[in-house]
Length: 504
Picture 1 (cartoon, rainbow, N blue to C red):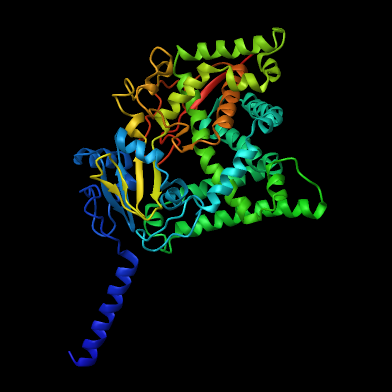
Picture 2: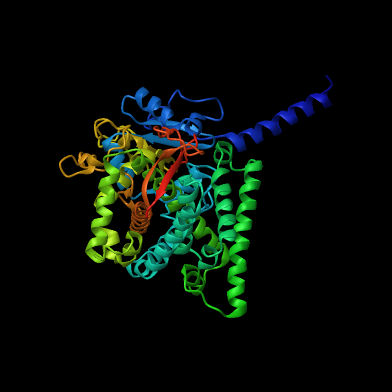
């Protein structure tokens, strides 16, 4: 090999080495970080974190003497935490930022700030500007006076959706389609736009765009966001289409000078641009649609499969209707329209318990934070383990929701576990994650509970009985088990339906 060829080979190796270091290098964890988990592959790190997350957390926690562990997800250094002490730090420490953690680790949700290439770089900032903007807008949209104002339309939407089910000749529905779409309409109307909520075609397109954005958060797009992946093209295309839907509405209002009476008009009046509006809407949908839409369907499944709780929920619905509209000559669905918002929010305790245990079972994902300070954060009081500056933190909610020391027979749907005499979720601090905990409670909890109460109450009012079935209406007795390796609430992998009998 002559000197010219040799120089070219060494030059190529130098370029490849530089590219590798730039694209794949990651900082070493400090000695006082939790020990690295052996559940890992070379270069890419712990791919199991994306493919079998709950299994991964169980194995990594079991291998650790403290329950805490370190791992890499591609370029990201992450500290996995478990147990009461670490859980308290995760939920309460002001140096662990919510938005920055989710922006990188979800991949499909809107980015809230530009990430530095070196994840251990100093960054003493607090929650990002988008996070503050998002929270402020959402809180204003979901105030009590706004929910009260929107209640009549919410009830009308619910009845219109259920009237369609009444008209179905088979009396069979997939609740993960029909009820999920109902929740999407509720959410679109409450945090976005009446023009879209009132147009079934446009509403369906927006749901399709949202599900595309959600479905294209692949392990590779999260671990190495610089990769030119097809999923990124799909997500960008879906985002652009969603952008254009809202732009047409905004441009139409400006052109005609016709104001809307909805959250979109509020955003316009605040001077928000289209990009901010669409980013807000997608963020709000991620915050609400997946969990609310999936759990609304699951609660109906659990009730359809339970001869003890369904009649008790029905009795509760009738009792509320009796208090506010005692005219029994009217159909129950008509009497429920007379129920005030105060009752919708406060007088359905059994429905609330049914929803709560559905959330516990279906909330199978991971919560994230990022250490945005310039110093290490101790995980335990002794300070023997720390979260490095710039590192991400992951805590799996199964640490409490699937814990047999907290919940008796945790695999079972059992609303009675929240009765005062059992109160299993109160056995230890932060025993239930369903509505957020610590410094980040769920801002949409009030609306989510309201829409759930409306859906369940009207469903039992419209239908005398409903049972599990297959697509042909044949009886089914088993609800597909929850896949605990999902990253969030998901539709069941096996199709299942509800067969219903319309009330006379």
